[in-house]
Structures are given as structure tokens and as C-alpha cells.
Length: 68
Image (cartoon, rainbow, N blue to C red; front, side):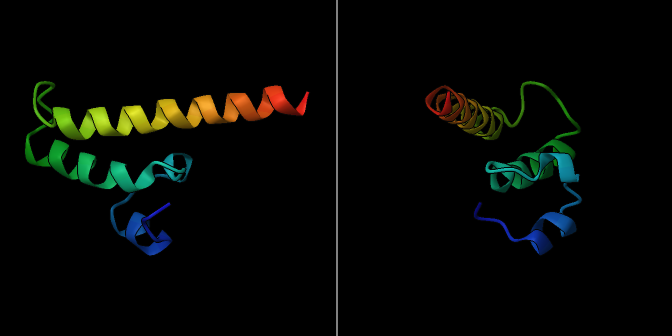
């Protein structure tokens, strides 16, 4: 994780979202607030965050399969 706990707290990221990809959620939420949550705005930031979450999911799934 590239964002510190203080950065995440200042950005008001809930604890449930402070995972490996939280550093991408900070600029995404800032963009969403700036653009009034319009769905066609902030596409690059959203794609980067969702891709990170997907890759992290695949990594966790691989880890679970290897441990069994």
C-alpha cells in the first residue's frame, strides 16, 4: 500500500476500503466529488482502481488454492 494511514484518514476512506488498492481510491474519490459523481467522468481512475481490486482478488484466490 502506497498511502499512509494518515493519508487515508484525511481522505475519509472507510476502514473496510483500506486495502492494497486504497492508494488508488483517494484520487478516485477526489475526482468523483469534483465531478459530482457523474458516471462518465473519472473513467481512468475508476478503471485503475477496479483493475487493482481484480488483480488483488486473483492473487488472494491463488493463495487460497495453493494453501489447500
